[in-house]
Structures are given as C-alpha cells and as structure tokens.
Amino acid sequence: MEDAFILKVNDISASYGQSKVLFGVSFNLGPHERIAIVGRNGAGKTTLLKCVAALLKPTSGFVVYEGEEITGRKPFEVARAGLKYVHQDKGVFQDLTVRENLKLSSYATGDYDWSKVFKYFPKLKILLDKKGAGLSGGEKQMLMIGRAILGSPKVLLLDEPTEGLAPGIVSDLATVFCELSENTALVIVDQNLSFISKIAQRVYGIKEGKMVVEISDTQEIQQASYSRFL
Image 1 (cartoon, rainbow, N blue to C red):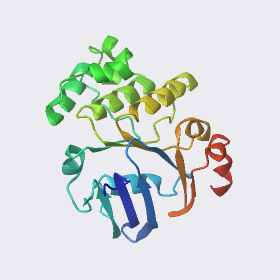
Image 2: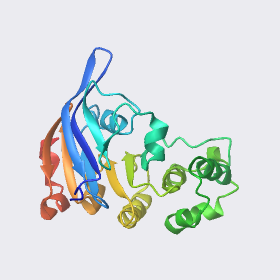
Image 3: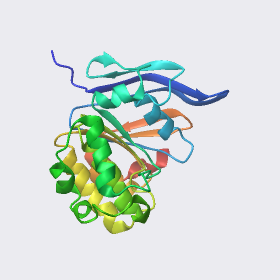
Image 4: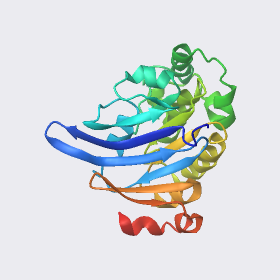
C-alpha cells in the first residue's frame, strides 16, 4: 500500500553544542498538503526545518522522505531528491541579476523552464536584469521561492516567508502557496497567525522545543485560536 505521507519526522532531538533545542519532535506531511509550524522566537522552529533539510544533524530521531530515511545525507542530496529549504534571511546573490540567480538554480537542477516561476511571480520577468542588492524584501522572497521551485520539488520547507513584508505581498503569497500545493507539499514556519489561518490545512504548535499541539479542525485553524498554546 502506498504511504499516506511523503515526509515523516520521527522523534527528532537537536542541540547546538551543550544547548538542547528540540526534544523528541514528530510530524507528518501528506502529498500536496500545506502544514504550518508555529511558535514564539526561540521555540526551535528553524532548527526543526534544518534537521529535516539535512542542514543540521539531529542528536536522535530520524527523517523519512518518500519512504527512505534521509537522516545523515548531505544537504545537496536531499535538495536534489526534491526536498528544498527556503531560508528565512532572503539571501539572494546580491551582485547577480535576477536572471543570473535563476540560471544558477537551473544549472543545479537541470530545469531551465522558467515559465513556472513567472506563472507565480510575473514581476520577476520584469526584474530579470536587476541585481539582487536592488530588490525589495518582497521581491527577494519571490526570487528565493522561484529558485526553489525549479526542479519541481515535492516538498518545500519555508522559513518565515512573510517576515518583514507588506500586507499586500503577504496576501499574494497566501494565494501562491495554495496554488503551489497542487504540485508541491508545503511546510511553513511563520508567526503571522492571520496568514497561517488562510493557508494551513494542519497546524503544529511548538513550545520550548517540544511539539505541544496538532490541529486539523478547519474552523479552529481559521480562527487562529491555537495562539493560546504559544
């Protein structure tokens, strides 16, 4: 029988040196599903995504992607397999143009079909010759997601995608994420509960490195009533 989940995170614990950050965290993700992980600053959300993306090796637990354990693999191997992490820092190549940024992702993935990028972010087509340093925060976020979807990933891990963005751009991202999930499952870490309430099909709450709640009730998600757990 085909597994109902494309991604399984099992009992992950993680530390930075002697500082323990995650304590036995688990969650699952179905194909084309949009889940959110919410929590206060320092709760361990980014550390969790880094463990899933193989950017940080957990001290215990394991990650299964498409039926295979990927714990301990190299990050580029995980990305090449179709599980990609979009960083929080909006880190595009500042001295390169939008076109050159996209070319680098195309070279890495072998996917030179930019039409899918322009479908979700038509503004990037206008900005192709603009350098990364001259982009606004919203434009950098578009470019980071645009680079990530080259290669047609099956899972996107998005770390604080709305941080510092204007409300109009946040609203546009909500629409884009819902459309993206037709082809790609999404794990979204964000503190903007209004944004989360519009896109998430399931919400996990993390507090002090522990998963404290899982909510799948549509009404409860839309009301963002899980804020009491944070």
